[in-house]
Image 1 (cartoon, helix red, strand yellow):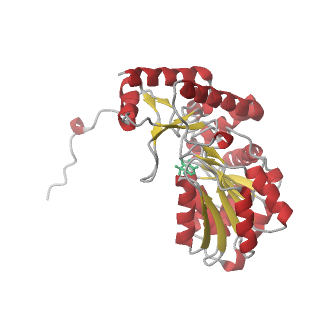
Image 2 (image 1 turned 120 degrees about the horizontal axis):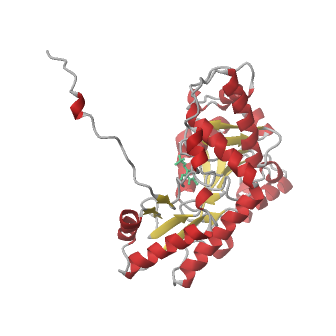
Image 3 (image 1 turned 60 degrees about the vertical axis):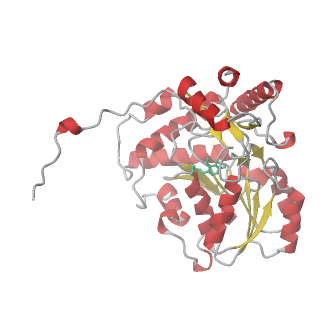
Length: 382
Ligand SMILES: Cc1ncc(COP(=O)(O)O)c(C=O)c1O
């Protein structure tokens, strides 16, 4: 039998992606310095020089999360794995967990809890709203055995912000020792996170939104009491997501091998974190707030409605309701095809017709908002 390898002439042409403005729900565009960081020399994941950089990164991730005690690190996986790692490490099958949902990602947490075999108390609200803190506290009073409360700080599917600081304060005032678990995927680098002050025990995020690094990494943070609960009662945790192993890899020296890290991705995230800190976190949050408010005012002046209630509207993600007579998907396709602008649509089968527009990372500024608004004007005028 012949084993001839096809001739080189059949090799496909080099991939050349178009230059897009990424103003959807993520990824967002990255700074040239972040891309350049990925062309630095590759070294191994057990090289002591890389170990030192991991410690620097752990420190920067802790700063962005507002964490001084506990531990912060990064998973070599996307935000979804950060979501799942918190559940499989902190929830044993049969544990009671209170989970809040007003959108796609809140529902995903509930689905992960179901697969973990948790006894989930589901608190759900319509898209555009968040579960009131009082309702969470009522559920906790009814379920004193609950081990964790889960919320999505910035619900990317609806543009709604959760009042995590208020929930943390209410939890502490109640004296209940349930852990507070917060999805910070769309929040990190774009709005304040104060893990210590608000009492967040476990939070996870991603690299590709307001931090403006390439996708595929999940910075996480744990409080001291969350760390103390790892491996509770010998519960079984998938090896790749075992946070006790990750903590050893990231923070113990000499380093213990856990997995081969995607080091070039880490260089990029390290550079994006340095750029965020050099800008100043408060200045960065103010820039996101200004860009989001400006974009939202632009849509409202044009007569569009926003999905999120005004009191909980995120700046970095705006869900604009598609008017009845407009084909939202066709508009998205034309923005992409004719203007090289990516915006998102509704996420999941139950989503209302919306466009989701991100003002994230390097794109969080008024000129970018103007470019998006002008493109919408042109497409809708047709
Ligand atoms: C709020 C939220 N949580 C979780 C995720 C999952 O992150 P990833 O797609 O990086 O796995 C996303 C992704 O957009 C998100 O917006």
